[in-house]
Image 1: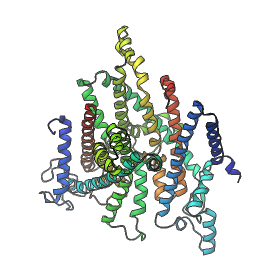
Image 2: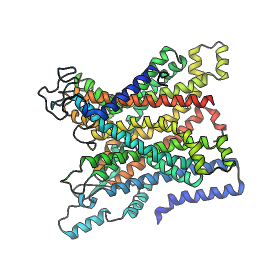
Image 3: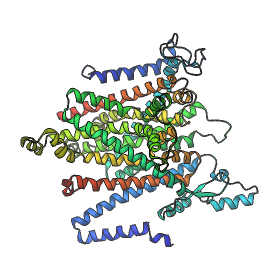
Length: 349
Length: 283
């Protein structure tokens, strides 16, 4: 039972301790801590629910994994193999085994077609850095494009410039990512031979090749994001421009562009940070189709493969990892918002 | 009402209408047989007899687009319809009853939302549409029903969350409190006061959801588990993907129709939401 001592049980004890403290003393700081813990409990519930749901559905697939991943000829050897792989466990016991392994950092076995296993962490250690890197590029590119666009459209709100850019952005946000990927792949990749359309080259094998392979996927993923980011920034900036401190800054004679960049951008960027962090989780695993089209070998492609190959244990680990990353990025964004806009610290949320 | 819309919205409404017309009256129109092989393969736009050209098999693209709109829109409308109905009921229940119902439903919605929607529909379709006998693939009708069911499951939490938020806002408004204090029954309050006010925001999001569903249907076809054999826009894409170098037109025609329909649906949803906002600000 040693594994219980570091994990859910600890978490439960600390929650109990805090609740008792709260009942006894009540202070506002403790209340805030308790609220954080309640939100955390909800997140953990969602995480457990999502992984359990997926394992349940994957187990409903016709044909049991035991038929796929054993190769012994006689019945006795087959049974031994099934027991060895842990395929004889029922849904709940299998899930609990996976859960305690996952909490300890073991991502479970990845079944090989000829019997035998290899650790899922091998696949994860290859796919996650790729996905993270692509996500980073996409975020940087879309922020670099959308911040100036947001500033321009808000500054010239309801004038011709704004109308044209906003309409273009709206159209961009509605174009499906795969449509863009296929079209760009044809024109820039096949027709003009400018960029390769398939595969991923790690950074260590040449920086130029690395970026060349990622241009098309990053563009296809960035366009919809740019559109949503600049629209959010536009609304926020328009409401900030009505604030008194902006009038004050303008009346002091500070130039318009300086006011926009120095005074307006910072308080207007909180919603943008929240949206960007919400997109992080989605970008790690939700890019299934772009991953598939450009054969990047990121998490999206691995998840698709795991579904078709009935790798329910690996699938649970993938989804759980994405959810954990999602939570981490949300916490990070909250901290960042506190730095960017100190006014939010005093708010009683 | 139509006159007040901007030019872009008018065009969008017309486009969505045209696509519906195609979907309903598709086979009655004077078009080529979508399954007939013509001799010209990979013909360009406006070539004689084939207004949108033909693909590498010699299929007439315009005829396939018209006939394909039926399944694409059928899947979108049914799944969004069922999804809005169930999601709306659950969302109103969560927002109106609050407390434990709200907690349980919110956690459930979040569970479904935390799984990327393409992956969720992928898993669901893989489970429901695979027949136990590998030699006998699942029939077309069953595939479509399964796709509709899985996309409905994907849509429910999205609509549920939106409806819950709207219901929360309206439940705390004065006239609902007044109705409660006068002893009006809960069901009556929901029917008379909550539903009429929540419906517009459901409509607005439902149009956006139609766009999402059309895209997901296309993605599923590209992954090889959508409706088979060129009978929807998505499967036209999947069929054309292999011949990209020889007949790019076969890829770009369905892409254009799919993209334009998604843009038009988003625009209609957006226009509805703006009308809604202006109505609320007049209060």
